[in-house]
Image (cartoon, rainbow, N blue to C red):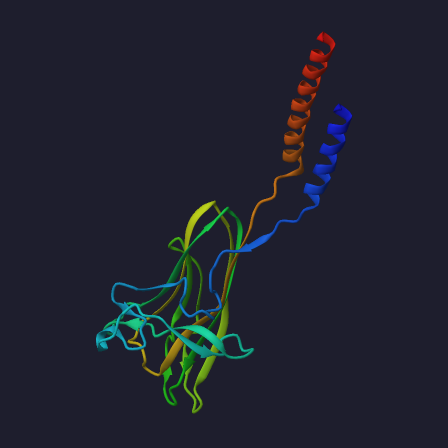
Length: 235
């Protein structure tokens, strides 16, 4: 009996040790193919992201979905923000979208494609927009395309955001944000996000941890075996 338990325990240990950690996608609708499902718009204190800016009679925190070639591999639905100050202010303002999710914890890896489309045929702009990703309110990565000079066809600028961090089990909030020092819609078509992904790989217990658990099972099985034999001999 004890030998059987020991053999089974060793087999379980070998199988469990060989099982790779599995990454789980915790973000819903990261490709925006279902519109803004799962996402909630927000605006900074003096900012706006709406296609019709707040100071022009629109809603300040209304994000949009547009078909755009964000990654460079073809057009698809993407998050479109018309970020800027409301009204124009020297302080960077704007906003974005958030999504709250629940995870069992582990190593989290984030990725997103970003793009900006500047349509002006003359002049230059100091900052098309500062793209940022925040986790629980903490800045994790950002990108500013810097000074852009216009051309007759306009510019489409592309890049990516990414980070890796350790997440505790429980509820967390991811935020995608763009801020600008200028009012929106001044030669800027929109700021885009697409292919947003946050994979969480749960920690796999060390073989030594499994060994301790299995030894415990063996011990319980041995005690039960002794008790049963004792009852049989007494009978």
